[in-house]
Length: 224
Ligand code: DX5
Ligand code: ZN
Image (tube, rainbow, N blue to C red; front, side):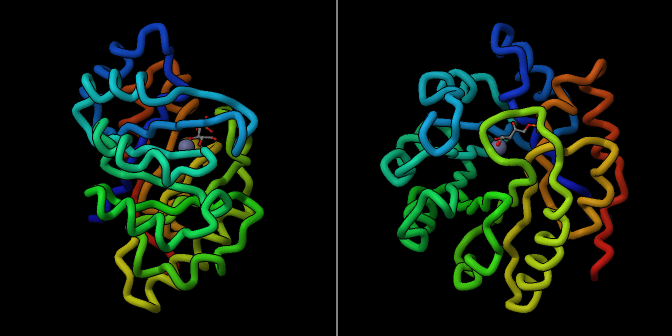
């Protein structure tokens, strides 16, 4: 049976107890650590950068899924890779030479992800379907955790999944923002492979139970 991939977002964790929060996820059924880097320019918030990622890397026993919400991400690809990033995702809106940046990420040895803001149509990646390893559909405007899921994202996922199938691409679809147990099944059915979940994991009374609940959702795609 197909199983959804779960990537808890450390942005919603307690930074004062970061090592413990990471240990908790290490011992859970979650698959990746989602790591949100914000520069205060591409998005209106600053999160953390290389020194913290170095620390995360030291503790994490699952792959780091690094989401770069920064301008000129191409300047930092090799550095993030050397700090342990297994997936590096850049935003379409921040990359005038996206094809080049995607291949730069792949050459660094990481998997290349391409993220789209809520207003960005999926047609923009039509000519990159076979280049990127994953597409991240933002279901909130990036910059902050704990926002409301934008339901139009489901239509984007369905359409993107159809486009990927048409060209026989194995690229994965990841969704990020406002994902919770109440909407996860519909999101997965639309064709999503990876769920990012911040508040709904770290803000839960019992985060381990929340992870378990996400992982036990039936993961069949309805459009196939
Ligand atoms: C938003 C970040 C998300 C965020 C998700 O800009 O990219 O990864 O941490 O947080 P929740 O799950 O709380 O919406
Ligand atoms: Zn993110």
